[in-house]
Length: 426
Image 1 (tube, rainbow, N blue to C red):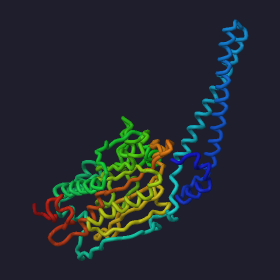
Image 2 (tube, rainbow, N blue to C red; image 1 turned 30 degrees about the horizontal axis):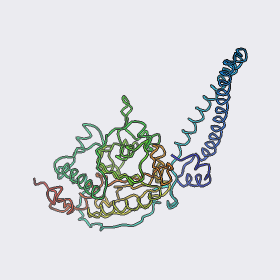
Image 3 (cartoon, helix red, strand yellow; image 1 turned 90 degrees about the vertical axis):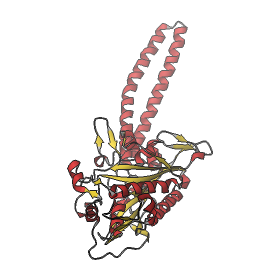
Image 4 (tube, rainbow, N blue to C red; image 1 turned 45 degrees about the vertical axis):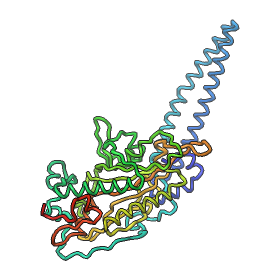
């Protein structure tokens, strides 16, 4: 979350950034600052009362030692009155602090100066593109038909067992999932990311720390009996590893990767755009996360973008990279690049990765800090990216590489999958 000191010192900049993100309740900025002023006033009054209580109590001890009981008793009554006056002030301070925190967590992160104006995905900026869009035969099939044809994915049984958006992968479909996951992890660890296998559920503090709560509460699956949340991405448990810790500067950057299933309710999703693998409630993803020195975060963001771009190039998929406009960015992000691959049978672009810099927005919530060369404690910056989300990668691989004999796989997957083609033969 944003820091009060920053909001107070850069009020106009904060308002401008909130407007770029199309945040509507701008008046919160003024009420927040007013509440902070009240909080400081109450804190000062409490400290003054506490000082008087301490001084009077100390004096009472001296009076008793000197045998001045009547004066000591008067002091005791004065202390009791001061303590009675202190109690409502403490209640008011607690209420002011809660209201201030509620106001702070309602504010999204501020966009980086390079974020373009705009409100909808159509206003995102294409940074660059790569690969070649294949020309398919007129009888080319979408991935949901190919999945059925080659017995790869069973959407109907998933719907029966759980519900829509929970498919069964089977046979070569399950094997392709496993091959992609292993390849993505190997690719990431070769670049210095440490692999983790994290929990698939987190507590409320962890979901709050990375900004899922309270912003995305309705999009998360909640195990109410224990108060746990099923993770929407491995970013949540990975970043929380270092919650409430001070990292040694010499240990930076911290680079983490993990494969996990991800769970998202995707409430309100319907229509042709959610057919097949286009939008699922449970899906597999390999994530990369970094915690870095604030001065290095934007250089790190570019390195992470290049990392994901090269991964897509090895899969021989046509792709493009977009810088998201203010209105299409997440609540927590300061700058986000989306990666999309072209789905040739559907004739549309599919998002497969987001790479974001959150600056200190998450680390302020989680109190992830380091000591700089002057011994002063500072907040680290956090970044994350998908490397990669599997469903739409699989959709594009199936559609773009289909021919009369089956599905050709990119060379980089041959060793992981065990052969270079998917067909109906064993």
